[in-house]
Length: 339
Ligand code: TLP
Image (cartoon, rainbow, N blue to C red; front, side, top):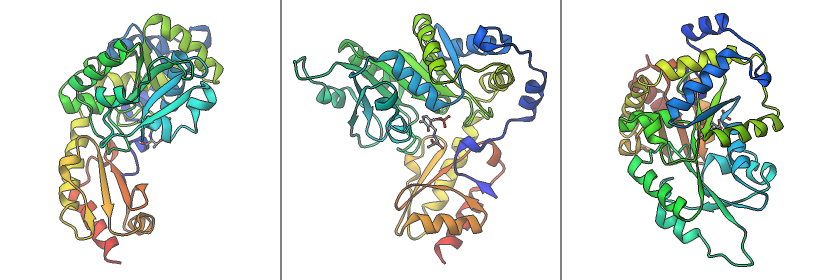
């Protein structure tokens, strides 16, 4: 089976499993897990912020981030197809009691102009505009990168309007590698940044949230509130340290494979797939027919993938498919589409 459903399916590397077995641990709710403490220190430097917090999932990291920035009733600007809005069970409303406000974009990339158009002047009728969330790379936009200059311009504009900026950097490492930047450079404009270790970076569990020390101290209480205070989490942090220290540069390989797959698929009849839109490790494939039956047939052909719309298939490359050839993927599609 070639599993292109997500980069979340990556298994921990052998080095990770060894490090996990040998990790020094303690009770992290008491602040006594040396491996978690080390991961949080290294993650803060990695993301260019004062402090960081290990959370079990990207979803918890995003939700704790929003809770920590907002008061009940505050307005949170999100790109219309942002993960924070689409895939987190209404968490902004349910956990922060805040009001999400969607901003439509052509390709997942918010701009100062689009944010300016959504902002409203102070008025007795309006709630307080508090936060803007940016996703980089953008999942539903097909792994699109928001380039540093554009992110910095958006963040400066948001700050000038008195807003905070949260970066959903579940795949920030992909965005950084695609631009030849460090993650700290890519996250520079953000007040808070969440980055997943469990996607292309292969850790079995874990994401990190980073920001100022004062912000992270408050976020730690938010994590506890959501039941995310873990005990001997050093076994997880040991794997996360390997993600941070050694698995970022190889993401370029995933990006090359995604591009090659798109180039092959673009040749097939009944398929629209533009390789120029493939900037990182995702390929969006638009079909001339409903996607669900095609996904089922592809599974019989040995290829697992998911949908991202009624006629849209999403493919995600990652370390565990690094040996796959783009031609094998195209062959499975050609077979499925001819049935
Ligand atoms: N994305 C998953 C699914 O939830 C869709 C995937 O397979 O792509 N932010 C972004 C941009 C994400 O893509 C994801 C996961 C998360 C946050 C949440 O991370 P987890 O799954 O660790 O809660």
